[in-house]
Image 1 (cartoon, rainbow, N blue to C red):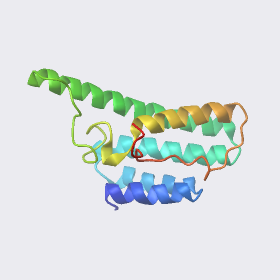
Image 2: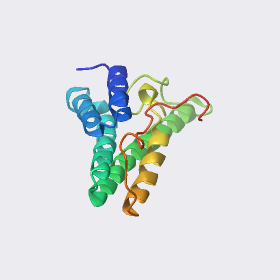
Image 3: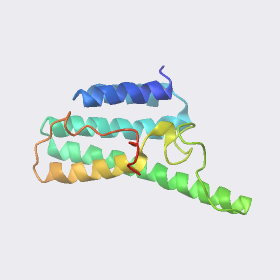
Image 4: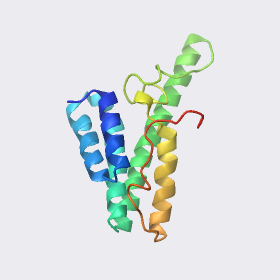
Length: 154
């Protein structure tokens, strides 16, 4: 089993190389062998990677469906993280902040678990799903998402 940071790094290398199915396997390993509270994050990322795989192979229906399924799963995690932060802030009597430190913890530990740009991935997947449904050909390497937020891209 890889550490979460290793999972993200390995998957990014595979995505950048135009090998989204292999990245899916890396995410699936983390999903199935890691702590159960982290499974929804890794499962959502695996769905994005296999959705990109299907889209690149010309399966527009399957690709769009999996991209949206992964995006919806990650959006739900984001909403849970925001809700947890709001509840924690209200209970503490102060302003809501992230539910945990950026880059640490599981799927509900703030808005960037392990440095992953969850909102950016949700936007990427939904936008790509729309283009795939519209008949646009997909090059897996050219469309590879960036898992981590880039400096200055907030």
